[in-house]
Image (cartoon, rainbow, N blue to C red):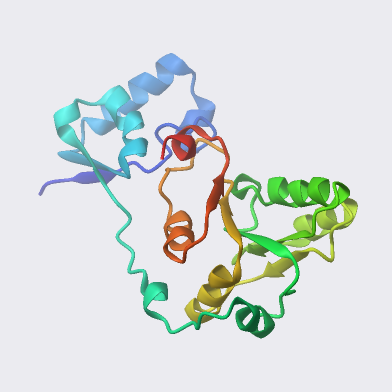
Amino acid sequence: VPVIFDTYAEIHDLSMGVNKNLNEIERRNYWVEFLKNSDFIIAPGPYCCRGPLTYAPKEKIDFVYDGSDYGVLKLDLGDDKGVLRDLMKLPRDQFLIGNVGAFEARKGHDHLIMAVGKLKKQGHNIGAVICGGSGDRTKWINLAKDEGVEDRIHFFGRLSELDLGRVLKSLDAFSDLENTPRACGLTMAILEGMALGNPVVIFANREMFEI
């Protein structure tokens, strides 16, 4: 029976999995021997292939793009940004930039909140929409208070596809601020943000910057 490995980011992110407990020589020994057990290796997107390519022959490796169905693009959301903001209880008068991802440090919500704080001090009427889904948002709520922008950071938990589409289409800009080596470049969040017509601000992480 052919065995196919999906190595994801564990193979190149030194803070994940076995990597965090191994030195460089031990890591090479581990992954070379581990990958020998596979008949084929896949990685999400071209940029996550660099890990397997370090330890296995090129002909044994290929990448796959995100296979999600972007059904949000087929929804009838309407074209009036003001109406969409009213539906989602978002202010009409703020320049809004959004970020989508679990309430975890690697998703970069803290960078977005602090950026809004800096821009507020410069006199800009800007706010942020953070759709976090899973996780505890308490840390980010407290950070917004510390930055003096608790009235400008609009938090959502897990949204339906329809409501997420409404939020994304009501934004002025979108961001993906994932900032660890676990980032795999062309994420579903970026694709959805771009597909709904938003300019995208990214963190200067290696994979994100290249894509």
